Image 1 (cartoon, one colour):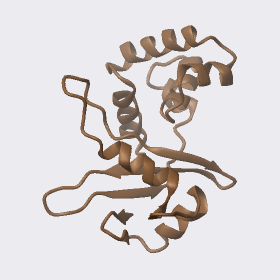
Image 2: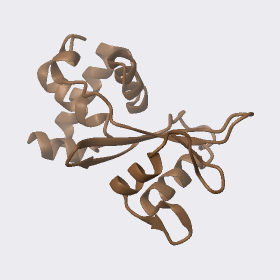
Image 3: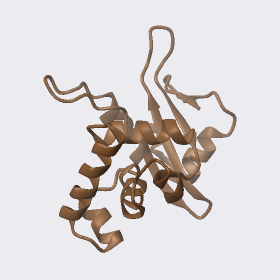
Length: 161
């Protein structure tokens, strides 16, 4: 975990090294890699008035050693905002099928929770974006969620991620 003081402070030893190893060197005006600094800036942006509640979105990268995920934790009254650096346990299609999803719906969910777009998912699964949308609607109905962020939160809750 990294507290986003100025400068950032490692709360978990080695977390800044992990961040730089997986997301790049520090930026020109920040001790954080440029993609991470931009992601934090986007996560800190105020919510749209009247828009849906957007949960913090993770930032992920695929490496030789697996997937590395950053999660943004907003500041509280007594602490600064922070980021968690982690390697989530894979959910796996079988785990999602146990929740009543079809094999294809589980494959779509595995990609949805990484932040992939319908077009990206369709390309990877060799189906149309419209078919991805239909699978997504079915998943929402089966799991009782109404958005991608709620779906991701649900999956991480039931998988212990």
